[in-house]
Amino acid sequence: MIVSKDNHPVSKSIYKQLLLDLPSLSGGTQFKLGKISLDIEGKDGLGGLIEEWFGEWAISHKFTVYNPKVEEGTSQEFPDYYVGKAKDGYLEIKTFDADASPNFDIANFESYCDSLANNPYRLFSDYLIFSYKLNGSALKINEIWLKKIWEITCASAAYPLKTQNKRSVIYNIRPASFHLVNTRAARFPMFSGPVKFVDALYTTQYQYNKKTADRNKFQQSLSAHGIDLNKL
Amino acid sequence: MIVSKDNHPVSKSIYKQLLLDLPSLSGGTQFKLGKISLDIEGKDGLGGLIEEWFGEWAISHKFTVYNPKVEEGTSQEFPDYYVGKAKDGYLEIKTFDADASPNFDIANFESYCDSLANNPYRLFSDYLIFSYKLNGSALKINEIWLKKIWEITCASAAYPLKTQNKRSVIYNIRPASFHLVNTRAARFPMFSGPVKFVDALYTTQYQYNKKTADRNKFQQSLSAHGIDLNKL
Image 1 (cartoon, rainbow over the protein chains, first blue to last red):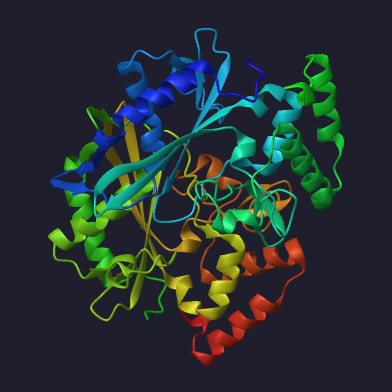
Image 2 (image 1 turned 180 degrees about the vertical axis):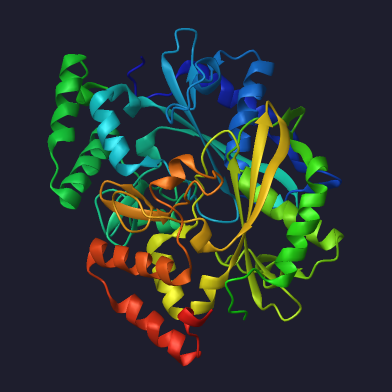
C-alpha cells in the first residue's frame, strides 16, 4: 500500500480526466415501476448512484480501479475502490449538494478509530469529492476535488475533530468547509498533515470515552510497518 | 385526525388498488451522467425512489394523498403522506428486500417517544410496506402490506420493544418479522394492540435512560384529546 502525503498516481490521472470531462457531466435519474416513469428529484440515493457511475466511467477510460463489492461480492464499507494494478491505493467517493455545505459522512467515528488501528494505511486513502446541482430532476456535476482526509477535516467547538453529535453521542466524522478558500474555514482550518489529524482523532476519542487502546494500537501498527508519519 | 385500530378508509382503498396492480409492478432505475447510462443494481436509494413513485401512482389513480415535502416545501421527517380530503390520516411508506428480513427503520427511537408525547395521533399512522426483488437491475414488487405500528413491532431479548442498538445506544425502532405467519415470529409475537405497544415503548425508554417525562406527556395528551386507548 502507498504511504504518502501525496495522492496515488492513478487517482491523480483519474482526477485530471474528470476535470476534462466535467463540462459534459450532466444527466439524471429515471425510475420506472408499472406504467409510471419518474424523473427523480430527490437527493437521497444520489451518492450511491454517483459512486456506482464512477466505476463505469473509470472502466470506460481504462483506469485500473477495482470495486471490492463487485469483485469480491462483499458488502464491505471500506474502501469504495482500490486503485492501481497492485491495488495499492484506496479511493473513497463522496458527494454533496453544491448549494449547501459538505455534509457527507467521512466515516463512522468509532469504526474509523478502530479500523485505523488495525490498518494504518487507511490514513492514506484518497477522497474523490463531487459537488452537484440538482435543478428539478436535472443533475449537473459542479466541482470535483481530490483530497486526503486531513485536507477535508478540522476541529470544532465541541471536539478537536469535527464530528456529528446527537444527544452526546458521536456518530460520524464530518467534513470541514474545505471548498471555501477563506470565510468560515478560518476559525477551524483544515489540518496541516496526517500527524495533526491523527492527534485530533484520538484526542477526541479520549475526551469522548477515555479510550486510549485504539491510539496505542495505531502507534504500534505504524512501527510494525516501519511508517514514520513525521518523515512523510 | 382519525383515532382507530383500523386503517384509514383512503389507505384501505389505496391498498386494494395496489394489490390489483401488483402483477404489473416491475421496473428499475436508470442513471445517466455524461456519456454513461447505467441500469442501477444497488439498493441504497430504492426506498426513497419507491416513496416518490407512490405519490405519482396515487395521483394517477385519483387518491387524495398529500406529500408535505412537496406541498409545504418542508423537509420534515413525518409523515411521508397525509391521506383523506381533510388530511386526517398519516401514511408511512416502508420497503425491504423480499430475500431478507424487514430491516427498515420504523422511526428514530428517541424522536418517536418525544413526538408521540406531542402528537398522540401519530400512534394511528398507517404503514404501507412494499417488499421487492432486485434481480440485477430488474426490480419487481413482491408483496404489499397495510399495517398499524403494533402489528409490525415486537419485543426483543434486549428490551420490551425491538430496537436497533449499537454500542449500548438505541438508534431506531425496528420491525418484527411480521411477514412470517409463524416460525421466528413465535418467540416475540407482534403486539395485540396500541396499549401493549405504547407500554413496551415507554418501558424501553425507562429501562434505557430512566426517562418518564415522555410517557407522562403522552398520557396527558391522550386525556386532553379525549382518547381512551382501552376503548378502541
